[in-house]
Length: 139
Image (cartoon, rainbow, N blue to C red; front, side, top):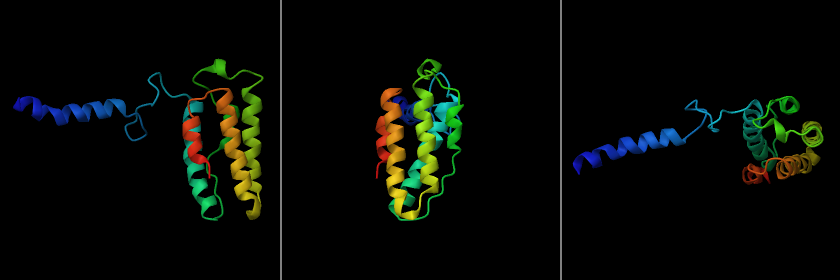
């Protein structure tokens, strides 16, 4: 019994490490590996959360991610990147990001909201899993 209790913290640590796929551990979140597009979208989300706070606080926005890579990044499941759907939806996102970057202060919140809508629209049509996370970007 004492050995079992003594091993419990070690088991918990090993289980936690096995289940946590993140940048700190260097392990991919996807057991099949992380695609270029998945990594880019995680980076876009993190940048989006930072920009969200800037918009909420009325600060000048600073977009740091190279969002135009969305047009060429390799996907986990290339079948989902149908010629008719993904390029058009990704292009809408790129245009929304360009409009956000160029927006005068009075239009930043509106442009930010439009950008988040393009993310949601794409994911509702192509890959719905991240929609829960995208909702966190909403002001």
